[in-house]
Length: 263
Image 1 (cartoon, rainbow, N blue to C red):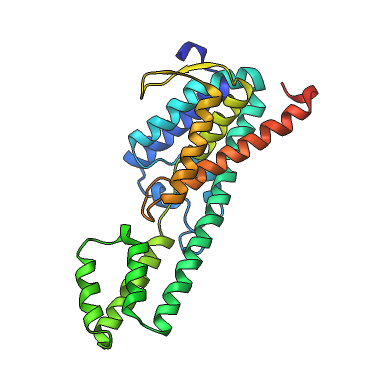
Image 2: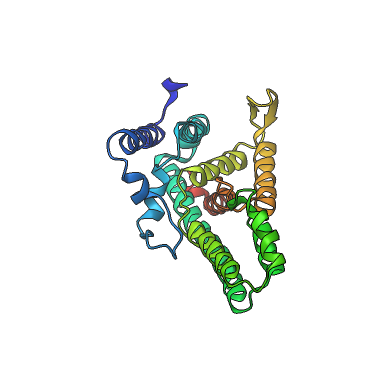
């Protein structure tokens, strides 16, 4: 496997592993500076659309992304060439960051409007709905407060506590960063599935053979499913994965139209 490493794949592996080691053992502040924050956050910087791809939450996050690159990247680089593989990786990664930022911005502003509506007309039932919609942010004890507030809806202290709670959710949401090369990797996966659709792959979990086109289709559908049912505190950026798939598919379709410059 390692004997077949191609130049771009090799360099991407080294850079990602090197950045992970530096960020976790030499200069931990990189984890905060280079992660991608919500556009509304005071911690957001435009360069994070690029830098977040080289940051990873933990060793297993890094391992899963680099393993995927190691498995699918070399054959794609041999087929597309180093330049196109690098373009695919970078455009899918950065594009996924941009689209995910738009998605989270819409989510944040929607929640912000709901919080403002509650502050304008405090109501225990409305507060309860917001808690249920965002229950991933809360400990189970919050429902004890919901019961107390429901029994005393005019108590100014309880109203203030409810407002503080909702604003705390806003702060958590706006300062929840995204890291990782998953958007770029999903671009690699869909390109592999489109260019080598009938290649037999052997999955580790479950240990069965599957054609590349079916694997990519499954990942796409599974990603959409997770977007629809995801918890607000799910630490997997499923929309970024879907964005990487869409951008990667679009790039391959564009390249396939121009056969003269495809390889």
